[in-house]
Image 1: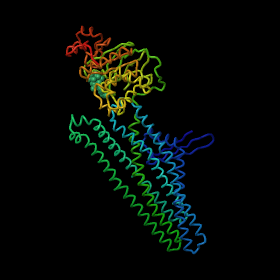
Image 2 (image 1 turned 135 degrees about the horizontal axis):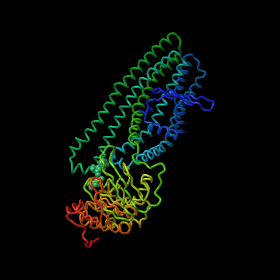
Image 3 (image 1 turned 135 degrees about the vertical axis):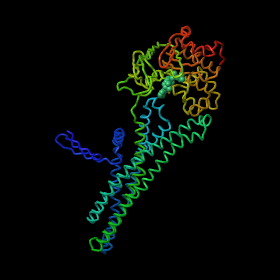
Length: 623
Ligand SMILES: Nc1ncnc2c1ncn2[C@@H]1O[C@H](COP(=O)(O)OP(=O)(O)OP(=O)(O)O)[C@@H](O)[C@H]1O
């Protein structure tokens, strides 16, 4: 049986286990009031459970360190009292205890550092792997829609936040424990001054809590603005050619970067202003009042002989120390815990959005694939209210067939391929491999079946060898060289200073367009998948290079036996296809061989006539 009473920040839970009634009381503090983002709360909880031993040990250390700190001060009180009452008998013993507590205090911090050495690197590994896996779980479409710089900045902020937060929380907990122990010690020495301190804590805590809550909101906006600006900076760097050659630096700076940096600066200003004007001043006002009241009260009690000189010194010292403790507490919350929480929340809500393409729970790898692809009544639009890009689209591609796709710009050719790759799921209808709906198999197994030679070849800032291995991680050197010879790129590679170990630069900028295309062909040869997609594979090349590459592609087509889908603007490149379909405004409008389509005098004939050349000449191509 469960009985709940929930206020905004306090949760009382009454439940029965067997014959026992269990009462659970939990207070939501600023730190874990996650504005209903259950995902992050669960994440932090899972994380805490995973490292429960570390966290439990940190709590024990915080209690020991707090106890020792006050005990050291208390020993000073006892030493003063012993000296002032000429009772020096146990002075040595008190001094021994003083030194012992000092060592214990430092020892507990040493233990904390030793634990950090053991656990912090492990936490770093756990968090980075975890958040990276979460991020790459998003669809390709999600990555198209977000700045890569912003995404990596969120990953960095999340791991930094999680790793640092534990130390920040340890410090905060240590301070809270020290304040509570102090309160007990003062109550023990003098009840009245203890009650004054208790009253102060009761007034101080909710005021500071509300200020910190507001401060956390400001911090979140600050972090979002910072990450947005960093995203734009990264995007500019990635597109530096565009900025320097096509656009101009000053306009880019003025129109894009300056507004983002101004927004970042504005939130920085607001956050700092709030700290300085409200948090700092409210804190100082309350603490100075406490000090004045306590010292006045102590002087009064001492004058009346109600407390000893040692007690006077102890309470005065502790009251002043409380100020330092509360300052440290605030500083820790303001400059460590809150910013880290803001970083974590902002990054987590960015990365932890619902996956738009997900494997079904019972999704399996496709066991047998005989090679046919079937688009059945496919409707697709980008976004919920977007216009239909594919409209009642039906297409059967036989196993081993070579299909060419042509159409006007924006007709939906690339979208059709992206649907097959599950960049996103179709809005209506389905795509089948054999009789298997692609939504029922794992994305990983689907993409293993497909090799693609795209227009823009993605290359990593790694060696050519590593870039080739992307297609087959366990490929032997012989296999790689053989694929490169077939793709007619081997000679280019060995002519480079470091051969296959040459680093290709970011996105492969150190290779020519034609060389990148041939690396992509070598990758397709290595992957040897049953579906091969050519997306305008030779469109951006000069005629000689195009002929050279087309020859490599044709050999690949002849040797692989794959089902081929080739998108082409230059119709001449479709010579080796069995069938060509024509798309217009998301609909399949013509279907047939080159000869049949020319005879129809429809859109294909119109496109063909508009192009200067015919098929690539049959002339012999020199390698
Ligand atoms: N990520 C996207 N979000 C929203 N709309 C998109 C997106 N990608 C493409 N579109 C739109 O979908 C339509 C079809 O685009 P698609 O890239 O499939 O055309 P295409 O036939 O391949 O064109 P092209 O031959 O010019 O490459 C276009 O109107 C385009 O603006």
